[in-house]
Image (cartoon, rainbow, N blue to C red; front, side, top):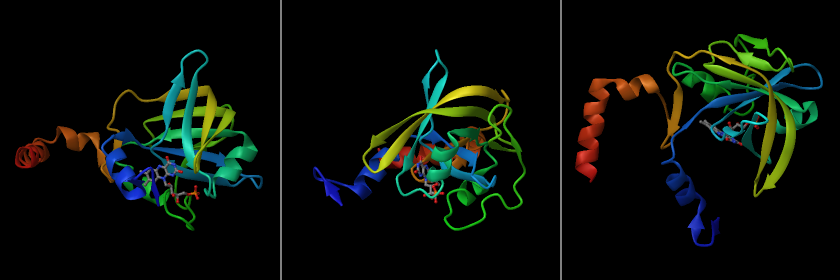
Amino acid sequence: MASGGITEARFRQVLGSFATGVALICTTDGAGQPRGVAVNSFFSVSLQPPLVGFCMARGSTTLPAIRESGRFAVSVLAGDQAELCRRFARPGVDRFADVDWWPSPDTASPVVDGALAWIDCRTTAVHSAGDHLILIGLAAAIGGTSIGDALVFARGQLLSTSELRDPARRREDDAHVARTH
Ligand SMILES: Cc1cc2nc3c(=O)[nH]c(=O)nc-3n(C[C@H](O)[C@H](O)[C@H](O)COP(=O)(O)O)c2cc1C
Protein backbone atom coordinates (compact mmCIF):
# COMPACT_ATOMS: atom_id res chain seq x y z
CA MET A 1 0.00 0.00 0.00
CA ALA A 2 1.24 3.49 -0.75
CA SER A 3 0.75 6.38 1.65
CA GLY A 4 1.78 9.92 0.69
CA GLY A 5 3.66 8.36 -2.24
CA ILE A 6 5.70 6.15 0.12
CA THR A 7 5.31 2.42 -0.45
CA GLU A 8 5.64 -0.05 2.42
CA ALA A 9 8.56 -1.74 0.66
CA ARG A 10 10.48 1.53 0.28
CA PHE A 11 9.67 2.54 3.87
CA ARG A 12 11.03 -0.79 5.15
CA GLN A 13 14.12 -0.48 2.96
CA VAL A 14 14.94 3.06 4.11
CA LEU A 15 14.26 2.30 7.80
CA GLY A 16 16.46 -0.81 7.44
CA SER A 17 19.47 1.54 7.34
CA PHE A 18 18.91 2.21 11.02
CA ALA A 19 20.78 -0.57 12.87
CA THR A 20 19.21 -1.74 16.13
CA GLY A 21 19.67 -4.34 18.80
CA VAL A 22 17.23 -7.23 19.14
CA ALA A 23 15.21 -8.26 22.20
CA LEU A 24 12.60 -10.80 23.24
CA ILE A 25 9.53 -9.45 25.00
CA CYS A 26 8.11 -12.21 27.20
CA THR A 27 5.26 -12.65 29.63
CA THR A 28 3.07 -15.49 30.91
CA ASP A 29 -0.53 -15.91 29.80
CA GLY A 30 -3.64 -16.61 31.88
CA ALA A 31 -2.81 -20.33 31.89
CA GLY A 32 0.68 -19.60 33.22
CA GLN A 33 2.32 -20.49 29.89
CA PRO A 34 5.35 -18.50 28.72
CA ARG A 35 4.70 -16.28 25.69
CA GLY A 36 7.21 -14.18 23.81
CA VAL A 37 8.10 -12.38 20.60
CA ALA A 38 11.22 -10.95 18.93
CA VAL A 39 11.38 -7.17 18.47
CA ASN A 40 13.90 -4.62 17.27
CA SER A 41 11.69 -1.68 18.28
CA PHE A 42 12.78 -1.83 21.92
CA PHE A 43 13.94 1.59 23.19
CA SER A 44 14.84 3.38 26.40
CA VAL A 45 12.47 6.19 27.37
CA SER A 46 13.25 7.81 30.73
CA LEU A 47 15.77 7.64 33.58
CA GLN A 48 13.53 9.17 36.29
CA PRO A 49 11.45 7.06 36.51
CA PRO A 50 13.19 4.22 34.62
CA LEU A 51 10.96 3.61 31.59
CA VAL A 52 11.43 1.52 28.44
CA GLY A 53 9.17 0.82 25.47
CA PHE A 54 8.62 -1.20 22.31
CA CYS A 55 6.18 -1.28 19.38
CA MET A 56 3.92 -4.25 18.63
CA ALA A 57 1.83 -4.90 15.54
CA ARG A 58 -1.88 -4.75 16.33
CA GLY A 59 -2.29 -8.24 14.85
CA SER A 60 0.32 -9.77 17.18
CA THR A 61 -0.82 -13.03 18.78
CA THR A 62 1.39 -12.37 21.83
CA LEU A 63 0.06 -8.86 22.43
CA PRO A 64 -3.18 -9.92 24.21
CA ALA A 65 -1.15 -11.88 26.78
CA ILE A 66 1.18 -8.93 27.35
CA ARG A 67 -1.75 -6.56 27.77
CA GLU A 68 -3.69 -8.89 30.05
CA SER A 69 -0.77 -9.66 32.35
CA GLY A 70 0.30 -6.00 32.53
CA ARG A 71 3.91 -7.10 32.83
CA PHE A 72 6.78 -8.28 30.63
CA ALA A 73 10.49 -9.00 30.71
CA VAL A 74 12.88 -7.80 28.02
CA SER A 75 15.75 -10.16 27.15
CA VAL A 76 18.42 -8.30 25.19
CA LEU A 77 19.84 -10.90 22.82
CA ALA A 78 23.52 -11.78 22.59
CA GLY A 79 25.50 -12.13 19.37
CA ASP A 80 25.14 -15.93 19.34
CA GLN A 81 21.30 -15.86 19.70
CA ALA A 82 20.31 -15.18 16.07
CA GLU A 83 18.56 -18.57 15.79
CA LEU A 84 16.57 -17.85 18.97
CA CYS A 85 15.52 -14.51 17.48
CA ARG A 86 14.32 -16.22 14.28
CA ARG A 87 12.34 -18.74 16.30
CA PHE A 88 10.62 -15.98 18.31
CA ALA A 89 9.69 -14.25 15.05
CA ARG A 90 8.16 -17.44 13.54
CA PRO A 91 4.37 -17.76 13.67
CA GLY A 92 2.65 -20.94 14.83
CA VAL A 93 5.59 -22.65 16.57
CA ASP A 94 6.19 -23.52 20.22
CA ARG A 95 8.76 -20.79 20.74
CA PHE A 96 9.80 -21.95 24.22
CA ALA A 97 10.34 -25.64 23.31
CA ASP A 98 13.86 -26.57 24.50
CA VAL A 99 14.58 -22.98 25.50
CA ASP A 100 16.04 -22.47 28.96
CA TRP A 101 14.53 -19.53 30.79
CA TRP A 102 13.95 -18.28 34.32
CA PRO A 103 11.27 -16.09 35.92
CA SER A 104 12.24 -12.45 36.46
CA PRO A 105 12.50 -11.43 40.13
CA ASP A 106 9.69 -8.88 40.31
CA THR A 107 7.03 -9.92 37.76
CA ALA A 108 7.98 -13.60 37.19
CA SER A 109 8.10 -12.98 33.43
CA PRO A 110 10.37 -15.26 31.34
CA VAL A 111 13.99 -14.22 30.74
CA VAL A 112 15.97 -16.45 28.36
CA ASP A 113 19.31 -17.93 29.41
CA GLY A 114 22.26 -16.30 27.69
CA ALA A 115 20.64 -12.87 27.27
CA LEU A 116 23.10 -10.00 27.51
CA ALA A 117 20.76 -8.00 29.72
CA TRP A 118 17.21 -8.12 31.08
CA ILE A 119 14.64 -5.57 32.20
CA ASP A 120 11.69 -6.67 34.32
CA CYS A 121 8.73 -4.35 33.69
CA ARG A 122 5.19 -3.44 34.63
CA THR A 123 3.21 -1.87 31.78
CA THR A 124 2.38 1.76 32.53
CA ALA A 125 0.97 3.00 29.20
CA VAL A 126 -0.24 1.75 25.82
CA HIS A 127 -0.37 4.27 22.96
CA SER A 128 -1.99 3.82 19.59
CA ALA A 129 0.29 4.45 16.58
CA GLY A 130 -0.95 3.46 13.14
CA ASP A 131 -0.98 -0.31 12.71
CA HIS A 132 1.14 -0.72 15.87
CA LEU A 133 0.79 -0.05 19.59
CA ILE A 134 3.55 1.53 21.68
CA LEU A 135 3.87 -0.12 25.09
CA ILE A 136 5.72 1.61 27.91
CA GLY A 137 6.98 -0.27 30.95
CA LEU A 138 8.38 0.79 34.31
CA ALA A 139 11.52 -1.19 35.13
CA ALA A 140 11.10 -2.97 38.46
CA ALA A 141 14.35 -4.96 38.30
CA ILE A 142 17.26 -5.10 35.86
CA GLY A 143 20.39 -7.15 35.29
CA GLY A 144 22.99 -8.15 32.78
CA THR A 145 26.60 -8.55 31.92
CA SER A 146 29.01 -5.84 30.82
CA ILE A 147 30.86 -8.25 28.52
CA GLY A 148 29.77 -10.23 25.47
CA ASP A 149 28.69 -9.42 21.95
CA ALA A 150 25.26 -8.03 21.08
CA LEU A 151 22.93 -9.16 18.31
CA VAL A 152 22.34 -6.43 15.72
CA PHE A 153 19.61 -6.09 13.09
CA ALA A 154 20.48 -3.97 10.05
CA ARG A 155 19.42 -4.04 6.41
CA GLY A 156 17.23 -7.08 7.13
CA GLN A 157 20.17 -9.08 8.49
CA LEU A 158 21.06 -10.39 11.94
CA LEU A 159 24.71 -10.20 12.88
CA SER A 160 26.88 -10.26 15.96
CA THR A 161 28.98 -7.28 17.00
CA SER A 162 31.87 -9.76 16.95
CA GLU A 163 31.54 -9.79 13.14
CA LEU A 164 31.96 -6.00 13.08
CA ARG A 165 35.39 -6.48 14.62
CA ASP A 166 36.36 -9.35 12.31
CA PRO A 167 39.22 -7.99 10.15
CA ALA A 168 38.37 -10.23 7.16
CA ARG A 169 34.77 -9.07 7.19
CA ARG A 170 35.84 -5.44 7.55
CA ARG A 171 38.08 -5.71 4.47
CA GLU A 172 35.12 -7.12 2.50
CA ASP A 173 32.85 -4.32 3.75
CA ASP A 174 35.43 -1.63 2.95
CA ALA A 175 35.78 -3.01 -0.58
CA HIS A 176 31.99 -2.99 -0.94
CA VAL A 177 31.74 0.63 0.27
CA ALA A 178 34.56 1.62 -2.11
CA ARG A 179 32.71 -0.05 -5.02
CA THR A 180 29.37 1.56 -4.25
CA HIS A 181 30.44 5.16 -3.46
C1 LIG B 1 14.71 -8.86 13.99
C2 LIG B 1 13.21 -8.77 14.08
C3 LIG B 1 12.62 -7.68 14.70
C4 LIG B 1 11.22 -7.58 14.81
N1 LIG B 1 10.69 -6.51 15.45
C5 LIG B 1 9.36 -6.42 15.61
C6 LIG B 1 8.80 -5.32 16.34
O1 LIG B 1 9.51 -4.46 16.84
N2 LIG B 1 7.44 -5.28 16.47
C7 LIG B 1 6.63 -6.23 15.93
O2 LIG B 1 5.40 -6.13 16.07
N3 LIG B 1 7.13 -7.29 15.23
C8 LIG B 1 8.47 -7.39 15.07
N4 LIG B 1 9.01 -8.45 14.39
C9 LIG B 1 8.13 -9.43 13.79
C10 LIG B 1 7.58 -10.44 14.80
O3 LIG B 1 8.61 -11.03 15.58
C11 LIG B 1 6.84 -11.56 14.03
O4 LIG B 1 5.87 -10.98 13.18
C12 LIG B 1 6.19 -12.56 14.96
O5 LIG B 1 5.72 -13.69 14.22
C13 LIG B 1 5.01 -11.94 15.69
O6 LIG B 1 4.55 -12.91 16.60
P1 LIG B 1 3.28 -12.68 17.51
O7 LIG B 1 2.09 -12.85 16.61
O8 LIG B 1 3.39 -13.71 18.58
O9 LIG B 1 3.41 -11.28 18.03
C14 LIG B 1 10.40 -8.58 14.26
C15 LIG B 1 11.00 -9.69 13.64
C16 LIG B 1 12.38 -9.78 13.55
C17 LIG B 1 13.02 -10.98 12.90
